[in-house]
Length: 338
Image (cartoon, rainbow, N blue to C red; front, side):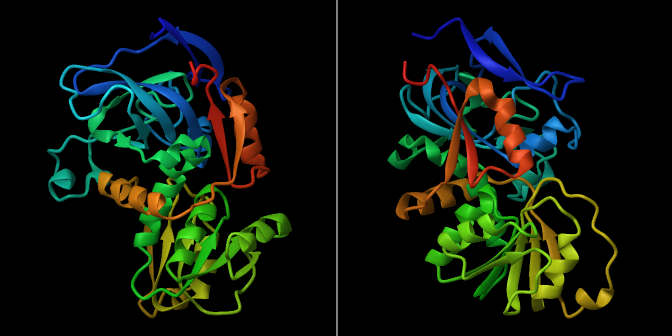
């Protein structure tokens, strides 16, 4: 039985705090499904939205884009997913299929894209509607709600990982949070040695990285014991770009995996020379999701999570901002089991 109303955490224009509100349960439109949410991971992008660091936010907005839930109703034209099916809803919520980027197979750059929890309502709620074509059937491992961060931290981490270049045996990860703590396990499984960089002095974070398989962990200002074949930066700190460039070999790549980063300071051309490359990751494609979900179902990825009830979303975001979350934070919904 679908109720008439639901609880949700809402960001309104002019506010920097989410409001716990009772709202009507949305109705699925053409090609959409109504999903009863069981859990939604909290992403650093949610902090950027709270801080108005991203343009074009829809207000009021329900944040959240690492959603695990069950389809409970199909809209007209939705024929692929079944009611009762477990699905994941990620950041990419819609693409037009007609712009030059979509036609080139680069839907992550779509001019008319919609994004879950940013320009369309997301997962900090008991229900949401989503376009069926952008929901992913989930394997049984996702009945474990601690897997919710795989829907963004895992997906964006994976896309960043695919951009690292060929023949990478020594990989640096800057910022050891939700994405990096998943990716280190994937890299280790594939025989790639990970060198983890944390905030200076974060010995607990460095110990956590080594526990998950990093061969070395140290301060972001430190020089690793080996020259790296590639580096991925998840921390939103622009000053890490020249530091990472200094630590990679010639012909190698620094990948910036975040949607927002502070300004990159000027640096000498000498650390970029030698055909080193800096590139960014923008969003994800459905192909990324399909590929990564196969990997996630075939290997035991540990997702270190801290659970919060929906109404404590502000507290969870504050903990993430403070850096006191080890791994990832996940919101759970009170009515998920009913």
